[in-house]
Length: 357
Image (cartoon, rainbow, N blue to C red):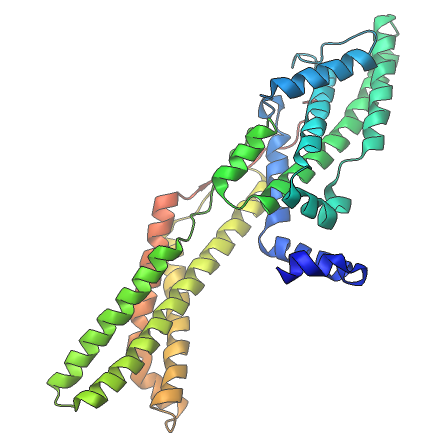
């Protein structure tokens, strides 16, 4: 709240807030995800599916006022005119979208990086008017070809700016996958965008309570059966339950976060190269096992140093606690395997942009 509500008010701190926001966006893969989505949008005109009749009517009115000789702006078979229709439609949707408070905040922080250029849009409109006038006047094919090439190149440039702005804005302001897909559809953009499996807090809290309670009961009963005083049993069982909870939690969290980060990095890198990538669930589970074991071993060793084994050497501590780290390692591997098996491992890549789309 301090970052979003107070810091931007002070001019001297706005630069710091902007840099921090950009760093957080990079950490969340927002620019990289947006770049992957932009490449997907550039694969062909079928990715553009306008649905707002009101916006189409407004674009139709603008085109009627701007172009005296008309044009086949709504027919994909005429790529030059249809691409300008895409620009006009998206531009008006952006104007409607910018009334949202969250989007205004995003524009203030990132507008210089992603905002489309109105001057370029008006310049393209002027060049397109000249092209259509020359086309209607039966101009030479060489002249028309030169004008068409120049216009298409400039429209590609502006369309990429708009795509980047929309994709970054949607990813930054919409947190849920369903809301993101709805917003892309609202813009008339059709995307194949895989959601990341959400982490449900209520399930985490229940599992945490279950692990702690079960460990406490089992350890207490085990110590009582060995003839320990009940006060000592409760104290030792509580300490071990807390250590075991930390060991499990840190190991699972580290393994899952690393898996998600590597998965996204592979997918985004694969988009750069083109084609598909298949990642094995067993390979991911093995990596999660190693990570979970390392984190579990570090956690239980640190806890042992603090609570009961502070006088022992590192080698002696590890010799006594290494088997316990196998528990979070196996749990981490099983959870990552389940996540991969449930969400799938096929990663869709984008093909090269089509400048004539």
